[in-house]
Length: 96
Image (cartoon, rainbow, N blue to C red):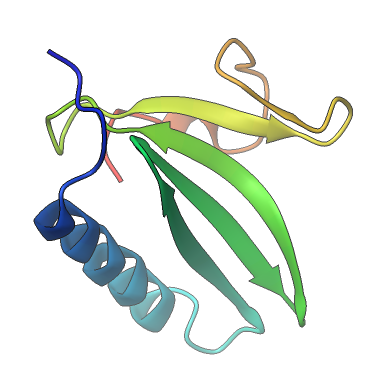
């Protein structure tokens, strides 16, 4: 049964994963990812040289290894789970 909201312990795990990625992969850049939570969704924004914008939305399914993914489309200003033609699509595997 899908979760209605992301449990606090899962939100803390997500924050730790994103922080570790920012620290280990993006440490010497002017970029970082920022997690936001609303209900059963995790929104990932990217700060890029001081400007923040949406990247994607992940839907919590109750399993840390099986999130549903939707890319943010600037053309429609909406998250689209059907869009699969974007740079990095090969890395989408249901995990954070």
